[in-house]
Structure formats: C-alpha cells, structure tokens
Image (cartoon, rainbow, N blue to C red; front, side, top):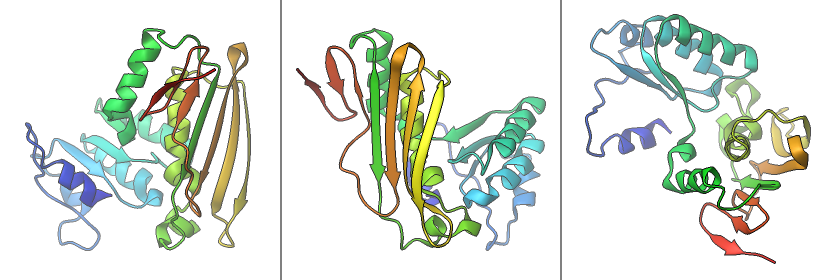
Length: 227
C-alpha cells in the first residue's frame, strides 16, 4: 500500500516525498517525528500500529494521512482525533475511493437530488486474500471488516450524508485464526431507508457499490434506468 501511495505521489504538483522511515531502515519513526522539515506524514504501517505511530506524529505537530482503518477500535480512533485537535493539526483517514471522480459524481447527483430520495444502498466487496498474512492473522490486524469492509460502509454513509443508522445487524464467519472472513451487514436509517453490505477476504463479489432511488439505479461505473 505504501508503495502504491509513493507511486501516486509522483504525479505533478506542489509536493514531494522527503524521507521514508521504517522499522527496517536506519531512520526511525521518532527521528521522522522530530524532523522540522517534514510537513505531513503518511502512515502505512500494519493496522495494529496505526494508533501508536499516528499518536507519535500528531503529538510532534505533524499533519497525518493515516491508512485505513484509522485504528483497531473506537477508543483508539477517538484518541487520535482528540490528539489532532489538541495539537491543531490535520488528520485524515486514507479512504482513496472518497477522492475518486466516480464518487464525486455520485455526491453531485445526490446533492442535486437528481435521483430522488435513496431508499436502499447495496455495497459488495470481495477480494481473495487468504494467502496474505496481514489479512488472516489476528495479531497483524487481519479482518475482512477492517481491510475491505470499510469501503462498503463508508460508501453507505456517504450516500446517507453521514447519518447515524437507527439499527445495525451483522453476521459472518470466522477463520480458524479468529479473523472475520466474510461479513453481512444490514443497516436501517430514518424514513425507512436501508443499506445492505457484504464483504469477504475469501472470494470475489461481482457487484459494485450501488444505490436504488425512485428513478434510477446508480453504480460507480454505470447509470442505468430500471423498471
């Protein structure tokens, strides 16, 4: 993931990668945090380290772009947000899809009420990752929810403008390691609106995130009429 980010940073613009820190490199995270010439830090370490490493840079007054998921639980997320506010620095979770032109077009159509009131959102994401240790080992932060489920859930919340669901029901299956392999989530929102999400690290899902409104069916790649 960090490699992909560094490739993207090569696009023209007023930015540059100044230095890279790693557990296996001579330059430590602490040295990077104390470097006065660094404006922003991208945190692409293992999920289990996001909270610890993120706090280190935030307390040092660095702006932070943290890879998803923000952290392993809500307590850690609240800790990161509070520390960013206390030090008056920028903090953002790196959900790349939110920055894509396709999602921007969905937000535009929703803002213009071009599709009417959305009554049902469906988001599916499956990516075979059982061969990747960080995806299946609990001590490395493995989890279908934390690794790819966040894309489905953030799409739902984007469509419903960040509204808190009235109820959430979830079920799934675990690997022998205790890591969630496949999960199904049903959320109910106000005015009888609903969302259905399923995600898996053991198989592919053929559907793209989509939404159903009275007039149209929208997906990030297509916009088709329906009866």
